[in-house]
Image 1 (spheres, rainbow, N blue to C red):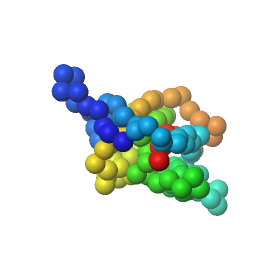
Image 2 (spheres, rainbow, N blue to C red):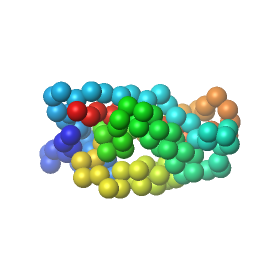
Image 3 (cartoon, rainbow, N blue to C red):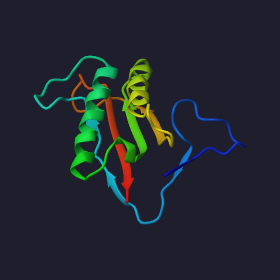
Length: 129
């Protein structure tokens, strides 16, 4: 996959690409939004901890399809307040830290999720040959 960041527009605000080109012949996986709930039902406090759980859940889904974080080409995330953006972005940046071709990224502030302890939700698109 190839990151697309045209020089005639402002660079991305953070560690993501404005666009991604997927080569022909790839198969796709899209995850549902993952909340920061661990397998035992526990929900850690804070956006960064919850986002790390979200990305761990995503890794498990991708692994079942024979994919990994390296195959992610888009990340959508939702936080319940601006105060949670930094924690989420720290976890996201760690998730893509070893990437050369960065995924695209969307981050939205929403009014809430199904339970008040959830402050982050993350979903991804991935593609692999």
